[in-house]
Amino acid sequence: MTSAASRPRREGLSEAATHRLSLLLRSLGVLEAEGVDTISSPGLAQRLGVNAAQIRKDLAHLGEFGVRGVGYHVADLRARLGAILGLDRVRVVVIVGAGHLGQALADSKNFNGESFRVDALFDVDGRKVGGRSRTGVPIRHTGTLRASVEELGAEIGVLAVPPESAEAAARALAEAGVRGILNFAPATVGPFAGTTVKNVDLTLSLETLAIQLTPAAT
Amino acid sequence: MTSAASRPRREGLSEAATHRLSLLLRSLGVLEAEGVDTISSPGLAQRLGVNAAQIRKDLAHLGEFGVRGVGYHVADLRARLGAILGLDRVRVVVIVGAGHLGQALADSKNFNGESFRVDALFDVDGRKVGGRSRTGVPIRHTGTLRASVEELGAEIGVLAVPPESAEAAARALAEAGVRGILNFAPATVGPFAGTTVKNVDLTLSLETLAIQLTPAAT
Picture 1 (cartoon, rainbow over the protein chains, first blue to last red):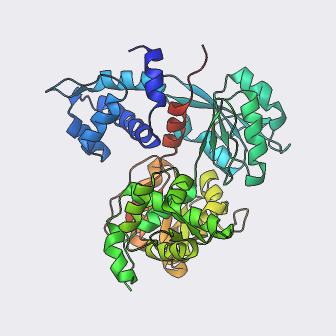
Picture 2 (cartoon, helix red, strand yellow):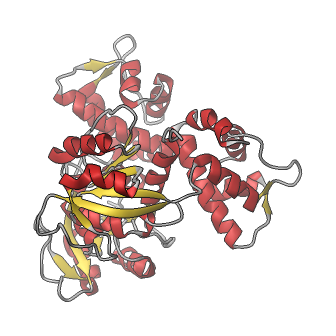
């Protein structure tokens, strides 16, 4: 399948399907590392905790995968899925806000792997500018954001600033030309033409855990 | 509805439904602040970006809500939903790992609101122990975890430690008696009897954003 052909389908993916496919890609990587050659859709479903029909439906949305009676060829599915999802290359990420959260993200394995690499942090604090995070990510002045995004070829900007600074930082990232913004600030930003904004609400993870807790024995 | 009666239903909630109800509760808070008295399920659905039937189904799972022809009474639904979900009181949270991520979470509005309050950070680094986060959360030695959890009445423990330390920290939290563990470490921990573990994978948010990006003009 050509990348061009995959695009309209990819854009038709729901948030939930996108989430499942991201998890699927991760599991395929683990399976490949384990030396698994082929796996059935029920096997994949069990791995992801979703039903097999769901997986077949998600994949059908992207094209033809799987071999009747055999299941999926792990390495092949991983490679094709990675390519379709655009996760088969490293994207440059920049983070605005070199406080605790920004530095934690800049140094995390989560944000530095096969698909992403954090190349710069930005801050307005002169005491931080010119320094580096623990793993060596340079901290630049926010005033250089536009030039830096072009220089680094950054595609994704992460907002790790206080809520009152979020909109301005997001606008600067959008104007600098990043294609996606991951917003950790508890504030809504945008929308900006040509830039996709995704809000990460860490409260949700805590709330969903609390809701799932078994009632206290009282 | 009595809390006891609500429990079995609450425990039957899927991860996705739990997530939607958490978002719903947040939206109801905003609506109440805006002075909205009643809202239709289509109105709520639009607010959450899900379909109205889905919301009615999620709520039906919890009991009787809504008035035919009127919709939902915002304040009443918010109060009852909050009580059923166990988010109508402050739960004490402790965070293991006083690195950048741990301190970012300890100081965040996300983890300090109507339903949660971070009362302590724990670390093994003697230079940090005895100090406080920017907002004043005390940093205690991890060796005091068990006694501290009891003393503080902590119900939830957050793992903000390196992957190699995750299992030991999680076990310490479980043995100390927390009922839920929110794991930010890129490592699987547990399971532990009587303690619910929820893994937070920050990579997923970055991947789902990347997948949703419009293809670059090349």
